[in-house]
Amino acid sequence: AVAAGIGHSQMEGILGTLNIAFMSGKYFGRCEDKIREALLSTALQEMSEAAEEEKRLSIEMGDVDKNDTPLITEVADESWGKINYKTKYDSLSETEREQDE
Image 1 (cartoon, rainbow, N blue to C red):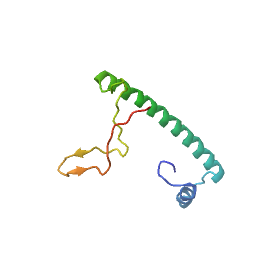
Image 2: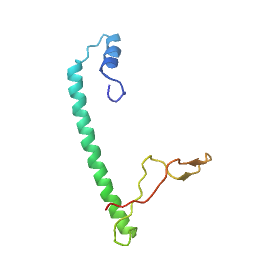
Image 3: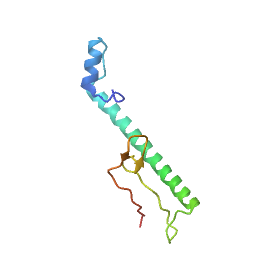
């Protein structure tokens, strides 16, 4: 149900038409909570590792400010400023450089 993007009621309805029993709503909620916690924990770990890698690469390439603080480009909407594959895509968002203080 989670992978399909549907909830307990929808999954229960689908399986009910096939005459297949499904777990209770309470148990489904507990399973959903465990999955959510695991996904969040994994995502945070991956983002932290990616940030460290970006920092290392910025330093390696000399992409730092006057205080040797790494300058890292962030892409919040997962688009790039200009991509031209015969579509003339322009991002509506901005990109900017920002540093932690």
